[in-house]
Length: 125
Image (cartoon, rainbow, N blue to C red; front, side, top):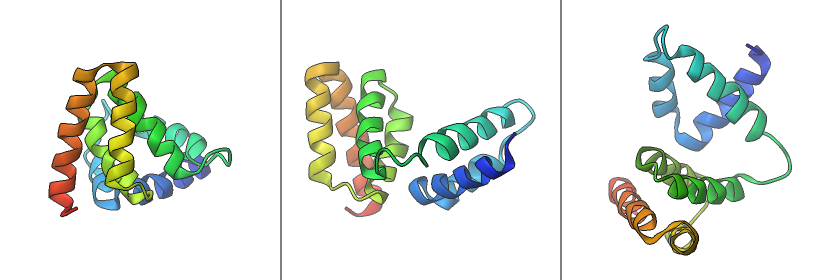
């Protein structure tokens, strides 16, 4: 593991997803899934999210689109919160899901809307 890249990734991961969630994920890792936590933190958050080519708001838009296509509600919930933290509005998140409905399917987008509404309610938005 590249400690410097891991630390950079941990910083970004906490800023986007929230320190409480990230710290809980890392603290609850065991011998079985710790390598996955390290991989995600180092490469996903340390390498990719730190690249200069796209800002965080754009990366959030892409993530919401791809997660809708993959129909991954747990990750959508997490990344809706990240998108809010990265400056997306409810209206912009809605537009992402409407666009995804056309290219990924209405059922997948409906699930994403449902999950996003849960996050908005939890966050008082």
